Length: 124
Image (cartoon, rainbow, N blue to C red):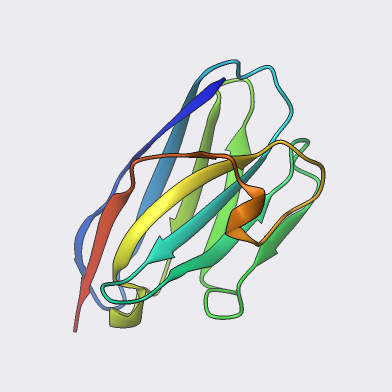
């Protein structure tokens, strides 16, 4: 089994940048897609970005396209979400997740392992 832990959240101002990291442990030799989701207060969990196992494909939600960049380093068992030009609407708890399938899934039910989440707050 794979375990995931997010880090890098915090409080920033609108226009600032923040980098989230997802560290994997356990059976990290397994092939899995990595995704980032977020959940704002009173809202459902929302897809943000995904990257496939061999780093050949990425997929982004329209709301973050052009501002966020997903990456991963399988040798280090880590994945990053670089967030630029942050907006107050990006305020949420951010989760990384693993999906043991090919491609870049965007539905939360396709992901079977989740981290505990990290808070990102963007002030105006």
